Image (cartoon, rainbow, N blue to C red; front, side, top):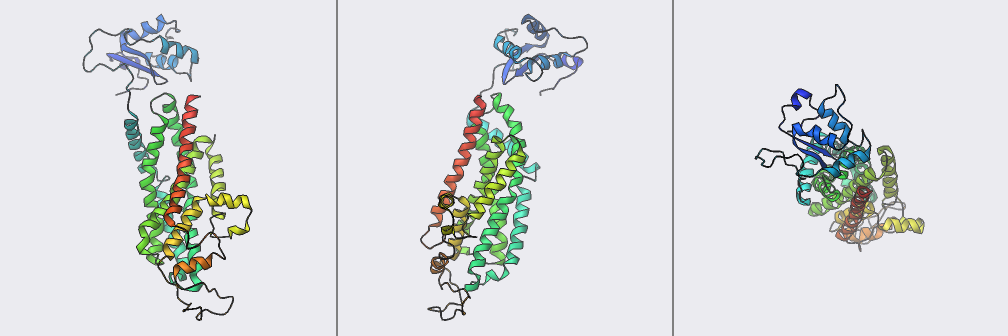
Length: 387
């Protein structure tokens, strides 16, 4: 097992020593030969009272010594230097272990899974928040469980709050991902892992965890309000896709901004704009044309519209009759009886809704936008690693 800066007495018990720096081999061979090798390169001698292990750390770490000296030591090393001709099965391997991208992803996925289980801020706290906040919203919009004319708009608003609240609390993930990035950045720069392996492992952990998050957010509304059970799987997929977009935004901001507080501030700004342009609060036909174009690619709008369409499709709303004869006098709301026609009538108030929209197409667009954020993170990590 590796030992970090062992004392002299412990170091003298080692048969072989492997010194790594910047992901490369600085020395690998018999422990008794390491000082001879270093002094032959013109490295300053071992100071009195300093252990050999501490000395090796000092002369090969660019944080403690001149980077050109470290580069000279690394360039001077040859695998045959100072090695015995015959090596036993327990001898330290001196060449770099080249792992495939798949193997790198598997190692990082296991590590991230352990970090996820040990750090409640990343997912488990959000699962709890989603359950509690959705329960609160379900009781707040308690009358929305009745599919009647007066509850059409409150039902839409309930979907908006259920989605938006959990997206906003994801801001805490920016801080977690930023600290996580500090750990992996050095390993990536040292060549231990490729950026794509890191990005892939993040995605493999995020997808199932966000599906659980979507279930936690939806369960109270299904139980208390009565969403469309026939479309439960599609509704859960749409909400999980929206959460995936928020997660990818958080991961991108965590790596490309210099401080996590700045990343959290930008994340809140992005979510605020997305929530405002989600189509559940204002009529998007009334906003500036540029904002309409932005809203067209807004994953929160796409997923919210998909969820509302899936819930309304195939259902009927009471209090209308055959031709509106059961509707109350103005300003009492009066939309329609069947869900598809209600969506068309709702278009007058909220232009982003309508029966012509296809839910899975909206989910696909939201997934494509989410993928663009993930690819941007991968590109940034790759570009930063080459600088």
